[in-house]
Length: 338
Image (tube, rainbow, N blue to C red):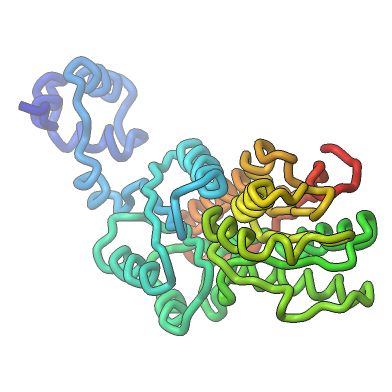
């Protein structure tokens, strides 16, 4: 049978309430008694019921992280940063994923109604009307990753997507001399895609380079769909001073592999660049020019802000903007290596 709090009290020759105070309010118990109880806990290998403890403290010491997906280095680095920060701050991290806005909304409703979480960090790719309404009145402290919810009391950690995409586009146009840059993004409603596409259009307009809707493609950030798209279009894309700007490294890698299968040389016949600087960018051949996103720090900062809001729910909202960095490799034909 598992060891109970009664067993610990009997072993230490104290009351159950004294054991409970040692577990939950150590400073209320004198040092000699506390040491005796802690010795009994260790000898009996007692593990307290965290749910009962949470009811007493009105705090579970667990926080949540909700992401659009758990697959791939981009999300795993966010999780790694979040988990490390949570542990350092004395919290356990609970992780879940939601594939779209409806799924996210349903998950958050469940968290609000039944959860034992002290707070939750949420990455949403788009905020619908229903999601907006839910989060404005959300009863659980929360932080938004890579976005914001107007009218809600929350903190946020965002990547300056426009800054990174403009740096990439200006490199392609001003340094590499590209005269046509195709854009392959995620869904039209995806907030990251919108920001990166706006930068693509802005820089081309500034340079006086003609561009139009036929140069823009919307996919799903996946390798396979980008490979299929490139298989159908690679010969039309290829040509002097032409490049494909894929909105993440997974899609860029799919385009590079499709080009190799079709006999189109990267970067001699066509430049290809990505975004995020995941491991995929380094192992693709040729290595991808890309934009490095501080994924680990994003997860860590989100949990730091969340734990601060759990401690003080009425603290003034904090918005942190993280800056991406252009990483130049061989796939853009500019003869520069990172």
